Image (cartoon, one colour):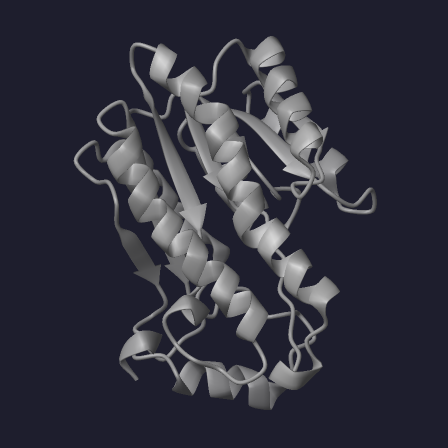
Length: 245
């Protein structure tokens, strides 16, 4: 599908990668953007203003993606405000770290609820809307390289992202041909501004391309997968070749 004037719902897009994806789709592709945030101290108002400044319709919605009632409320609100939903980008996530024997049941549930159950329920809520539209729709899931590489301390995070990768394949099969479903697995992108030099050097060394990725790298892949109508059921790596090193 072409992105111009399409209504794209992006979760967790007030800042970082999600924000860049939203801005790229709005400023470069002319898409209308509905996006969600979770914490009130996220810069969602600034993001909303920047999107509107790009000349497109945009609106922010508070969403606890682990709450099914919240999901239904937001989907209904987006449909009321925009009239349709052409694409869903499941970007919201939580990154938790702990040694295996120290992972609490609460932490495990949080990782699964936010990173896996939330995208599942949101996709279930949006898919019937897309199927009823003549042009169908597109769903993109943002998984993670940790779904494919084993790193100590990230068991619950990685397992939730493995589930999201496989959910992508099942959704692609069951929702075809009206809805295309793909996933993106970023590697090291957007290190914290206060990242120590040794952390940056480590990330560069672990990349075949010898650099750290950017939010723009992910946004360009999002555009490609939205607009290439012969792609579904696959996970696309944006990792600078880190999975090869």
